[in-house]
Amino acid sequence: MKSILLLALTALCSAVRAGDLPDPIPEDIHSRHVRHSPAWFTRGILYQVQPRAFTPEGTLRAATARLADVAALGVTVIYLWPVTVADDDTAPVFWSHRQKACKLNNPRNPYRTKDYNRVDPEYGTDQDLKAFIQEAHRLGLKVMLDLVYLHCGPMAVFLKEHPDFVLRNPDGSMKTAAWAFPGLNFENPALKEYLWSNMEMWIRDYDADGFRCDVSARVPQAFWEEGRRRIEKIKPDVAMLAEARRSSDQDFAFDADYGFDWLYRAIVPVVSSGSPAILIRDMWTWQHMTRPQGYRFTRYLDNHDIACDAKRRQTAWGEDAVRAFTLLNFVIDGIPFLYNGEEIGDDARHSIFGRFPIRWEKAATPEGQAKRQWLGEVCAFRKARDVLSEGRVQWLENNHCDSVLAVSRVLQDSAVTMVLNATPHPIEVQVYGFRAGTTRFSQNLTEAQGERFKLGPYGFLVSERSGP
Figure (cartoon, one colour):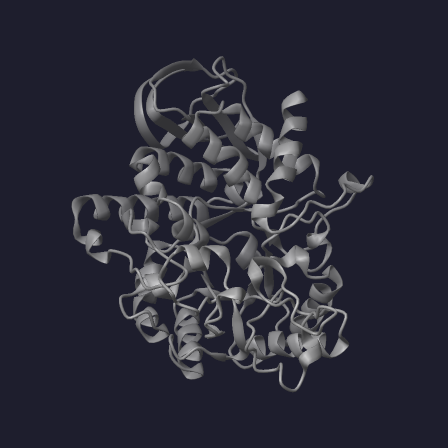
């Protein structure tokens, strides 16, 4: 229990980076159950498209031409970062710290919006976005757009007619929210109507399938709930992803949260700092202890923020560690989430503030081909098994819990079990109660005899069995 309490403290300390604070845990938390959500989302595999990285051209038209390759990988949902008109104001007072620190001197941050109702000419036209979504749908892919409603740019097009749409200081100047951007005024009913109409427009006119909502816990929950009511009248099976950790989000408004703590406060410390592997199990326990039944998280290793601010996982961790923890994210409960280029082991540094494309030429190398084939097999494995989307999680004990994780997904008479060496050192381990089945994936596995395994650095075994 002590380790779980420590996790609660570290999660609270991480709230500034995540952009929200965990809300108090209600007494009835375990008697509640999350909303019913569309199966295309809860059973899906997300793939983020960051247009400035996704193609050398950086346009929606070029991205549309690559969608067939994405669909062939086996993912099912495209999450597209903001393609609305970014603010081009050059005053550094309204630039975020990392926008200044990157030294690219580009004011056009896609998370600092100038016009919520138009596609930024950098990416193309409104029609280009409609064509992107239409082609995605033809290929069997859903599309979620990114909503950025906590703040706007200082030159937002509505400010001349509606100066009260943003928060104001006593002297009348614009009051900033996070990242030095002007904060939107959710006390203003007209602003809320404006944004709800924006949500409706993307669903009705563009046929989007849902939204990822930026820094959503800093926006009133009642706003998101009413927004969901309105867009469900247009398309009943929309999905909403919260970039937050608010325990009440999935009562009605949202279908999953971003799962910050699973990555940043568990996997990253284990891989990057040598923290004990049991931290990952404890984090899973803490996340589920403090959330309603059925609460959902996305599971990822990389996204546009990570690729912008830190070394790519491929560079910092190496291929063996990336494969091991990617596979864990596909086996554990939640919704797997891939960032564009992961399928070829892309290690190019990306940026929110400039165009640094994926090195797609790596796809033609033996390493790139092997990675794409492997990840395609992982996607197919996940999609073909109900146990990986609906099965309960069962942790297995072992005699090296500081180094090894053993976890099963169980549904009726089906079980998928992963044994993972979470360290860069070889290890011999006994997993108590392990029952052998058919090996589906393995890496650096030198011996498997009953409950005993010899695993090399970041070695793993994924085994599947059916029957009693």
